[in-house]
Image (cartoon, rainbow, N blue to C red):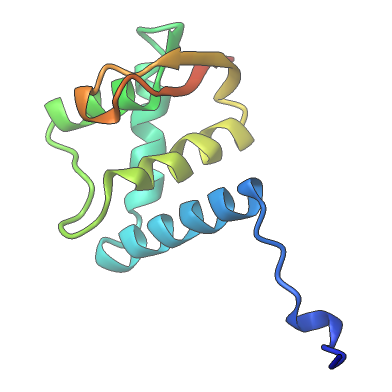
Length: 116
């Protein structure tokens, strides 16, 4: 059996895959529209002035209603990074899960956020 150096071992657990996906989506959005992430976090902050608990899809819908969208050719999943960034900044925190409203998501659960 061949011995493989430690640095070649990859640990693809659920958390690592989630974090990698969030990073790729955020980098893609920023490459298409520099500063997009900061502007999106500002929408999270504004949304918390009017709502106590919410899902990322609620914030995204609010931003889109106000003319702010993810850059062209960028997945709406880039909002995951926005929500994590807002949490790290102390604007929001995770409090549970809730069924999403998007019918294409097949009644899956998403993080429920609360303003801080």
